Image (cartoon, rainbow, N blue to C red):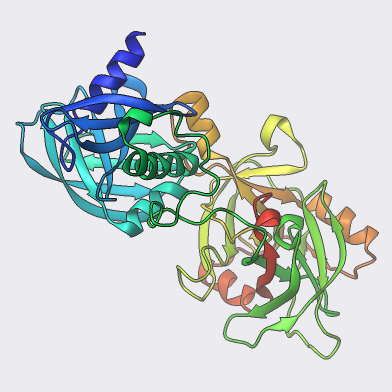
Length: 414
């Protein structure tokens, strides 16, 4: 009961675009760890807003709400805040390490500020997994976001129903949110569907015959599969074979296509601590149309739970790097980039956000896969070291952007 009382007290303070004196909650919003309902202006008795809050570590709370006018609100309460009521302060947002926005918040109480979310920021918040907030130079607050999409739908439903039926008929606003009225959910994203959706990854040519290696999850559920080298026209690719267990796939370029060069696989084991170079096409459409190059080391010779098929690497990778080549300092292939640690799950489990923990499939699994697919690949002994710029220049001739049309359902499995 103490937690519910604390949450209700926090919600009652949410007064920037609602009422300075609010009563409630009327009805209920219960989604995951979020608790809330509808609130009225204590002075007039009129409906004010719908809101819900979730508690975080160290006494920090996050409040999400929509007022009667349809504006989305976000409040932060922290014991570390020191504001005078009515103060304004800039608030910087980072979503999933990428999206950024600077808004201005107003203090409702010494330990709480509230800001109105523009439509684009509200939509980004709804889809994000992690939000980092900094205000007035304070220590950044980290919020692992869960159940935000159904929460937004429930709050929009709350506003719609209260405006139509009044506070006296308030009930469970989480029911009947699958098809909220269009007028109430103008700012919420449409529900997920199985409609066509573009997705992309990276691949690299491993034979003069135009065989291309990528990850199984890059091409899973795909149709209209295409690949192109930087600056060149896209070509239609076909799937030759795929291994979901080891997350590998083999593609074939058209027989009329010729490649000046292709990758060679290192014929010697790599060691923990050796330097590596990862090349790929992350965040297609947001970052450069050219491939990106990152460097790091082999952090471990095994992956999650000591899985010996994988290397752990510190070279930063992002969505879109999947299936890309991992090189040693001589320019030979030592792995296939397959993904990064699930930061959200680790943050939930430990309270800390891990950095640069990424994985690549070892060449042993890759060579077995190519042997079973009867691909005439080549191996090479590591010789003289190359500059990273030279490795990247050589890779340009055979590192490809892989793109396709898939379904949102298939994409969710990635």
